[in-house]
Length: 333
Image (tube, rainbow, N blue to C red; front, side):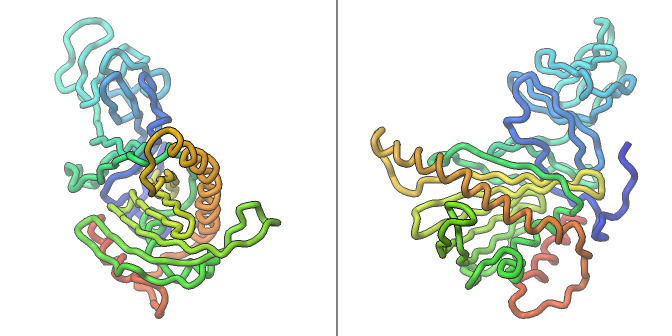
């Protein structure tokens, strides 16, 4: 049972409006039924042959949990208790007895999008339809998606704020010469910022040589649940696309999903020219994912134990945190 919560640990309303990831696409295959908790609701995610649905976990007929024995029947999910079936819109399409469907028997569902290897639902505190869409993704030139998932005590506004908190990059993560390359820009639910930095890397492990490496970051944020970070390593000819997907669970905990794809920036033609790219991606992907996850893990104890200071007393070098917070206010309207 999820306790009723009015405020998150940091004092903010716990469930900002927006799109939130509920699973990686690879976690929900055809015929699968998967349970999740998102924005205070227990839901089931299910995939039929042609579509995917996210529905309240408890059957509106007599309350059985569809995540505990529910199965896919054609284009619907079938309740394990009495065999009632519901399509991805929540409409009851059959009873377990072949008789007339009771009037008004409809399950609650959420708008669903599947983008860049993740499944998202739209949450709005007043039940309104989606106010914007997530960006399309063109996989051309990208390798396979690799990912990790974590659960921690935090709030999506706090994790997303890290993207504009330039001051912490040197103190927490050891970056040097952090500087803006693009001033922060907002457009409705979208926020964009760019910066560059240097940091030492040890590709052979902690006892190997340290290499000073430069990075550029182009950060694209769509609401508080979806951040896409394009990272380039100019001297190495590598490009990475990082996903940071924060989803509120129960007013106290969030599920944080981190995803990574590598892209070959050069134009390669023919098998001989493709082979080196494949080998480079295969070798570099786990290394970069480990570094990405290591950075996130350095933030976890701070996120889980910090207080939300409002208004903040900002200093030169903090980054555009004040502008970010004004932008974030729209998701609580």
